[in-house]
Image (cartoon, rainbow, N blue to C red):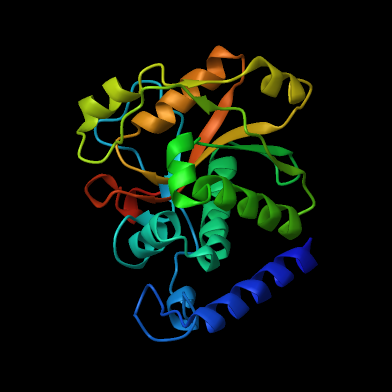
Length: 247
């Protein structure tokens, strides 16, 4: 597993050099994320409740506010297909997953099932990749390599037609847009029905919490208990200060 991550990192580095990229954090020529900016990324995650939080939302965790380097990384990876950011974003997501499991009292050897929030098929086609799925897969590899535990990725969610782009919508608009927008197909659920793994929803950014809550609703409707929500970042105006920490 460590060898797979190392090869992936080397391939990313080679692509960066060939394409003549610049760091998304400081704009220095070279790697898509330079060593200095990567070294300054968060090393822990905290609760990141939206305000107001959707009723019943599982505890959400993020590594930091959605601004500065974290925002540039998420946007670059999602909208500009900077695939060299999959690794560091996935590692940040893994940090949030660990925080969620520790807060939930899950043992360090307990198996985990990471469920990525699904992207609209049209968005995946337009972008040429599925950024949330890629980050979640990287997080699973990172967690599996770092500890003696089984960590798998389950694509248990599908979007239904008619979901509009979320950009520009307020909290109420997002909730209305997403209501009933996801489903958990029976065939996908059956593949994991015998698993004792703890389930976590994974996404890039927590904004209003509407997306995570809809994903949670769809999983719970299929009989799947959700332990928590893990994300890379949370919007600045809703990110809890660090001194409020884990509860």
